[in-house]
Structures are given as structure tokens and as C-alpha cells.
Image (tube, rainbow, N blue to C red; front, side):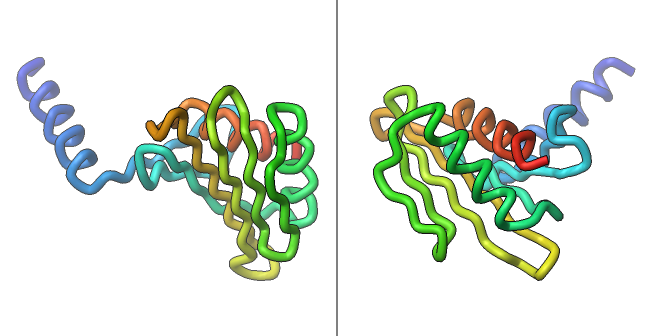
Length: 127
């Protein structure tokens, strides 16, 4: 039985690495799901208003680092935080749905931990 469970877990791990997409649901995020779409990017859709997410993203970005570029119309923020280059993107999918995407790289290497942390903090702040 243990061998069968291990085989299923190994298969799931291999398949997820082949396709490169993990689905996460965190306790802090609540019902909002997030996808890791690359080694440095986490993305998810939420029913929170665009304006609330934008304000939260700017506030968290200012607290965590130095904003290099900010464009509300395009929904784009670029900042330096914890020696990493972070890009935050907001997109209106529908009038009720907004996509939040956070990418982070440190010395040209993926920094998914920082991206996840910022993603969760932005969603929490937008409440």
C-alpha cells in the first residue's frame, strides 16, 4: 500500500514538472487560487475590485522595496525588494474579475518565495 501511494505521488510530481504548473490554495489566500506559471511567477484571479488591488499592490510595494516604475493604466509595478527585481501586473478580465501576477528574480535567478509572499500580502491588504 505504501508503495502504491509513493508511486502516485512520484507520478504527480513528474507530471507537474513536465507541465510546469502547480495549483496552490493557501489558508491566507482563502478561496482565491493561485497558479505557479513559471519558476519565478505566481498568478491568480480574484473577484476583488481592480482599484482595491492596485492600492494594495502599491502600498505593499512601497513597504517592501523601492518602486522603479508604476503605471496604473497598464496595471504595472516594477520594484527592487530584498535584492530582487519584482514585477507586479494587474489585468481586468471582466468587470468583476482581476488577474494578479507577481514575478521575482534575484541575481537573474527565480525567487518564487518572494513572489508568493507579495502575492498573498497584496490579496490580504485588498480586503
